[in-house]
Length: 454
Image (cartoon, rainbow, N blue to C red):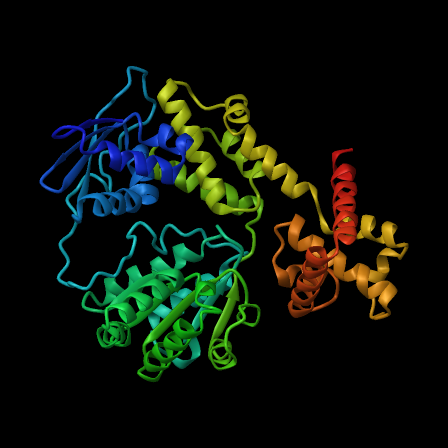
């Protein structure tokens, strides 16, 4: 990264950014850029809109935090699109783009922390997320309505929970520009609460949260287990709920699995709880086509289908793979093909194959063989130790070796998710305390993986 400023004052800042991002990410996205820092504005010169989109959505907050840490200044980041390398680019700059106009000046002074690129219009609705999508729209159309409040959306990471939360907030503001809407993570809530205690500013903290029209909290699991923060969130939740304000939460598991206090857990269970599952092939193709069209990049449907077939478990990783391929082709001046995609995405596809190769039936087969029980015993009602213990081990291995959610695993064993949680924790504890059992589990895992390589 070439930096233009007085002396080398930016060097320590960008060194810290590189440390946070990692050398590979830094070298790919930031090192080729040219930066100029004047009057609290960091201007980043980069080659195309894709580059801007990536830095803006993924790394801008890290850059701002690093500058604040070293300079004490809240900086603004601006982007200048200018071809940096001499290689031809096949990205077609659109005649109209969300990046080409000046940002709208909103009358609402309240900082909602929303990403306005996440909207209902660019969320791909599918059978895997339809209930969550409809529930999110209902929360907008009738915010605070007892039927839709609170709304909790859960799934494994990278399937669209965050997109829906931002879409809800953006739509509410579009309909009511004066609304006080706040998006934040559970981790940020905890940090801000601790800071309010240290600064003796609890009253202003409570006033901020309890005066909201809509609270959108991502990753509520980070609040669980932190007694004081969880208690404060409970009272915040109650204040908003009793005043008919909309509450939308996301987590990586169901409320029962979060380990929350019973009073808060029961509150969450009184609302709408909906799961987003892994998208099917058609949905993954639709997602990639939408991203391709949004960045105006020439990539054939055969390549799109190849990526969609290869990346099955995570929408965020699916999109990231597309951007990685686009970046490679644009900087090398080549048209994307399946052959190029195989090379550029080799590591990602290999990891995906390893994840997808291990399935629940393989786990049942190997565990059953090891403990000399029939595969039908895993779904039977038998509770003898000779059957129950191998069943618990198989459930544990499913949590470790597959991307299945806890409810999905439970269904495979004709049990509910709480039984899976119990089995997982029980086996984990025995692994920690019994080195012989740990070795036995490692051997079973090795046997499972060797089967899938044949």
